[in-house]
Image (tube, rainbow, N blue to C red; front, side, top):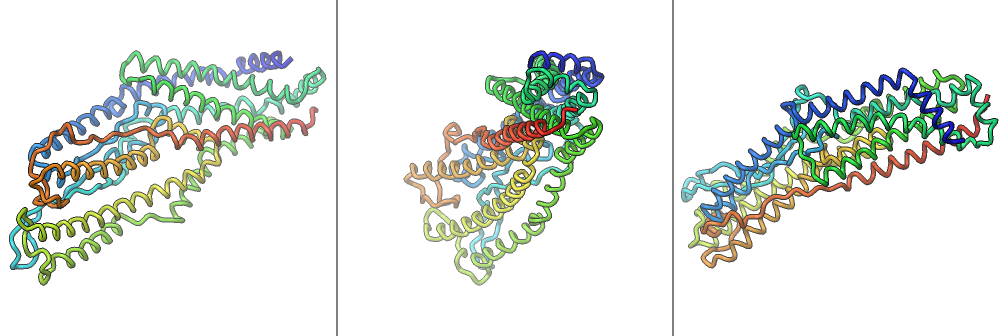
Length: 481
């Protein structure tokens, strides 16, 4: 009896105008997605070429520094580190055009003064520090339409509303619900049959669109997909199914609560707009006003004040701490310069890390508050699997900081192998003057992390269970006539 109702539901859905619209629109959008992200000027191929060019330039600079000496490499640092673009950006764009794609291992310009008028002339380079670029405010958002799978998933949740708003209320109005219930079938079985009929009707066109999307990408050869990417794509299809499923249960709940199908449609549309747009935007604004991030000017002023205090302590005209220039023959003076450099490095590092950590905490708080919506959970889980969006940049920064420590440890370890060195970091005169094999220098490696996916996926499953329970209870208590 259940499958009889399922087949009746599917047949009814196939004969509607809404299904004709969906079967035409979904494949068209999926093909457009493949063309935009695969072949357009702002697609993955262009971003990947830019990434490789920047990586090659940074490696050449690193090679030149290593060829001079370990001391030069220690001061200049590993250079610019760019984030590898995700080949799955067509699935979840994640606003990557406004998120920085690199961090800078920045070495300040040379200075030619020491301290005071009677100080020894000395030219030096301040050691490198990890700097985080500001996010782009414009990016290329006008050059590339945001037609990713996340947008299509949100569109699917809208189509789900159109297929479920009259699933029970319409049957009740036509008098066919009482006819169905006159058979040997429970209300739970009727609800399950309604769910399966809508789910199959919605997922078949979506599956066709996905297959066409992937076929265009494979035939064009614009985006290479390895085994790991295929597994993540399979996970994203599962996320699409969970999103569609949750809105089917929500539609069945409203359809069972109202006596008129149009009333159910109005309530569903209002709920969908709130979950998809209104509440996430309002909560994001609330979090931004609740705990505002210090402006760039405020951070710059604070940085300048603290660096000025260090300059006054070490290099004021009446100070004798840095009157002499460092040299391999004067370890004591060289250590005083090392103390000065390390004080500057620590100040710059603490301020730069604190600023971006503040931003990350605010973003995480906003994400946590907006995850009451299944649409927000779906978007965050998609971005996590695709390795795009803010969370992927947070993971990139975490690995950049680890690499900062790894690179520093390498310099100190390599310096200890030179008996002629004073082993005083990070003063050029206190480190080894021998060249370094560039192959021995540790390279930056960005590892994928899908920890951010666990919570939104768990919440999506929870939303399905919750909406199923309230739909079941509502249908059990509703009138058949």
